[in-house]
Image 1 (cartoon, helix red, strand yellow):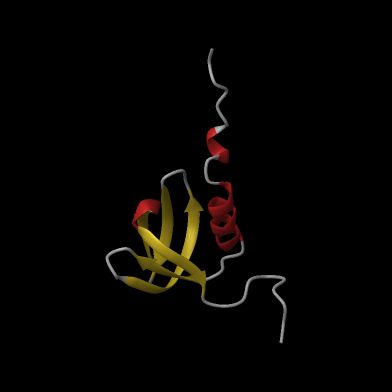
Image 2 (cartoon, rainbow, N blue to C red):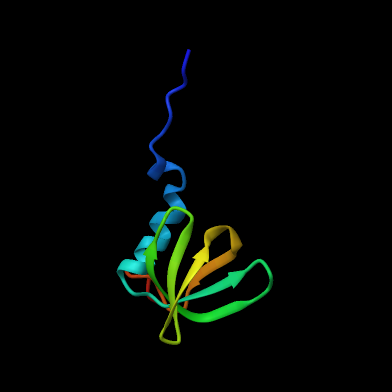
Length: 83
């Protein structure tokens, strides 16, 4: 008997949705890597299966998702409550 497999795009839907919002809205993000390096103000250009295309200081970089520790917005997300 064969198991049915989920579509590939459904493997990491929550993470990819979060990253795609940042990419679509051009939200600057801080990226923390597993080795301790931090990029304080990056812009995500494209979200791929295993990598991100990120712009930092005008230069594009290809970053493997498995090297990331944390990604967070530098400013508020659209629709986030205002205080």
